[in-house]
Image (cartoon, rainbow, N blue to C red; front, side, top):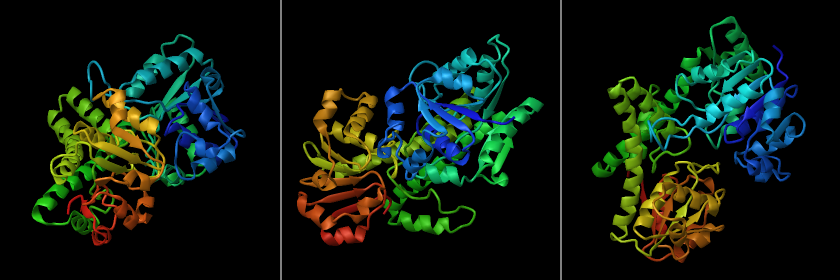
Length: 463
């Protein structure tokens, strides 16, 4: 099958960048990204490429190269579905906040709505590709919906999970460790797999394109994120032991990371992991395990989340105890709100939970993040439903200038590892703060010796 037209439903952190790269590498294919959110689509179409809704280094340039040629962003969902031969589903799959599986299971209502819309609109055979992170056997549910429409259209369901790290998504898409495609073992399923393989083969070496059955593909995504998150929680668990024993977690991480069986990646102690995938996917894994009666397996993976939550609470408590057990009416400057550098994504960011804890102690939080807006910060706190919006507004302020955010502060908390923080004039910041001036480095980012020489009371994780 020669593919000339692709549609992606969902213009978020996965759909937008992935389709931009496909459009750039496959100029012979028309790629249309659709979303019901008119504001989001308008921002993808903004003539100022700095205003596109997903911040990733290099993404704006790539979007600009193809947009209007073979890359289009639209709210006309039905039209795009009708014209496409391959339809990617890349909509949000948040953790359920209601009913059975609340707090663990993935909420698949948007996936089901997509499937029903595809079934209603389609007049000819389609390949439907799961791009969202989904629980095992979701493809079965999608296929059941699509195959029972009564209109005679044949659908092939493929699983093609994303393995992107936000902040390096463009590089991850251009030079992936692997591309995973799962499909049926039937002749029709194999033809569908080949059609998608041929698209990626325009820029990805064949030995990096793996094909499996659907179920293995779906579970591989959850497993990959669980293993990565497990490493973060493991080193964070050791960081607490290091603090009690006088060891330095950075030295421990360096020592074990030189073991070729372990490796050095994801061994940086911190205030904890965030983002849209790690926690959600592990909770999904926990729920699936429990649903099959595998309670020991569920308990094992749930501990990764428990450790991550503990690390964030421990960081908050340390700020309070260090500041003489009271932070009421004290100004605490947050440098960073995004869950990691080089992204404007704040989902499950450690900063949200640390801020929530400190606001409970009636601290005044001053935030500077180069890519996160004040509106987003308030939205993140409102989502926790700890306080009303007006109450949150009373305790939190955003700044466009990091020096203003730190002025007259009692302490600074580093919550995101933005490279620019290392380049600041820390003497100037120290001079503007109340004394003693504290820095709580939640990302082990700064040169502690240099800050201590200036006069800061400096603390990092695990030492």
